[in-house]
Length: 140
Picture 1: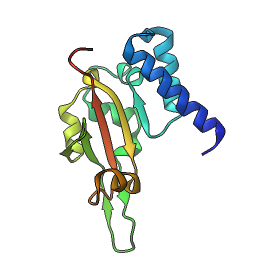
Picture 2: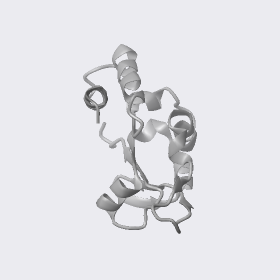
Picture 3: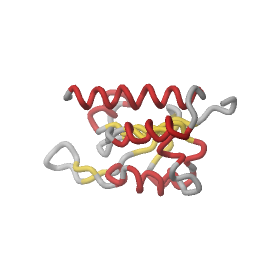
């Protein structure tokens, strides 16, 4: 990973943490976090989600990172294509249509894990990868 990419990722994560803790407002700081996160193809932060409020999470992902919703080629010659699975707060929820039941206003972050990363974290059975959804806590 290049230095520039690492720097953008660190900035996006730091801005996301500050925004979720209330240290900066959505105004200029939230827009900065959203711009920084757009450089990371595997992460969607709260500030970006606030820009697409009022839609389903499926629509938000389609607008922000449409590639996550596309079928991924399996890892072997005989494997077909597979779609990402959805994990909400550490619980496997199922297929992509789960995103239709969720709304950006209730989400803190989304992270895409490739098939190898998903296998490392969750075991086998994720040839299309995983979209990890972290919801906002009730006390936030």
